Image (cartoon, rainbow, N blue to C red; front, side, top):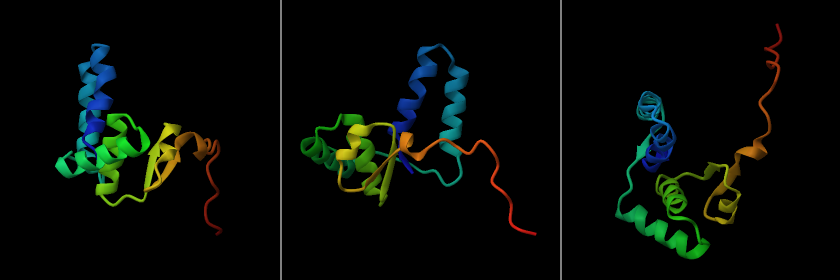
Length: 111
């Protein structure tokens, strides 16, 4: 799951670059990807985001993303932003710490 705010964030660059077809492809991917729910921001999420901003000094978009994750019952939050590791209400996982993908395929099961 992710906040509907992700849609706003992911569309900016292709729109800024005059590439509406890329923006359309991103939108289509986010809105139709299996098992991915776009959660709308409501008053409850906004209030939780305000609490997070007050407690941790998060930027509004980050606070909304984390509040949405908490609202949806997430126990972990995947990001590239190390500043979010201050949040204690859920595990913050940094993409950079996950390591590089395997260069070679993993072996199959024994025969």
